[in-house]
Image 1 (cartoon, rainbow, N blue to C red):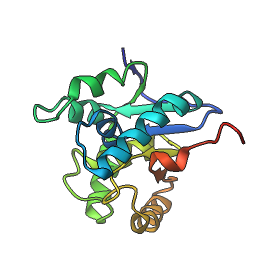
Image 2 (tube, rainbow, N blue to C red; image 1 turned 120 degrees about the vertical axis):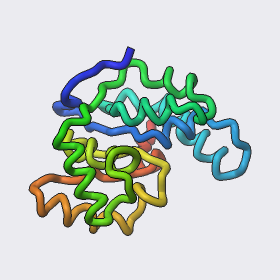
Image 3 (tube, rainbow, N blue to C red; image 1 turned 180 degrees about the vertical axis):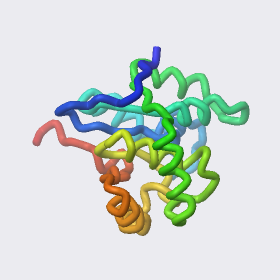
Image 4 (cartoon, rainbow, N blue to C red; image 1 turned 45 degrees about the horizontal axis):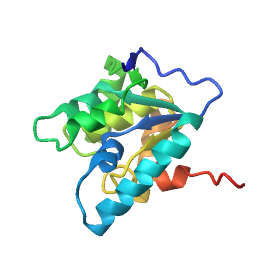
Length: 171
């Protein structure tokens, strides 16, 4: 059962909003080289590292993984058991609208990337974990997102791919 709550409480633990593309990578049956690397990396991260963090999703992740055309949705949805849900509050929706207006994220503002970034920001997540390197884990977006967040008095999450949140067990 996914734990629901207004906020993703994280206290002293590092908090991560896990975006849909991570779960998609974990369950993909594609065999092209990039998909294979992302699948293997994601599965290894999930097994070895997820317990070190406070993980959070939103209803948007659930909606995207539940979409009729999403391949392997049931397997991805099972991965959500025990994760906290960040509420898609009016504040999240307002920030998503601003992110689209300011061209930080593509539209629509009511779903997708804008909602993921807004939820992670409003809920003060340390990181947003994603394989979406076009619109999310994109170095060209960081400065623009930081400027918008600074202007409204919020700190943006660091948007990273799983390989950047890897800790060597021998270190």
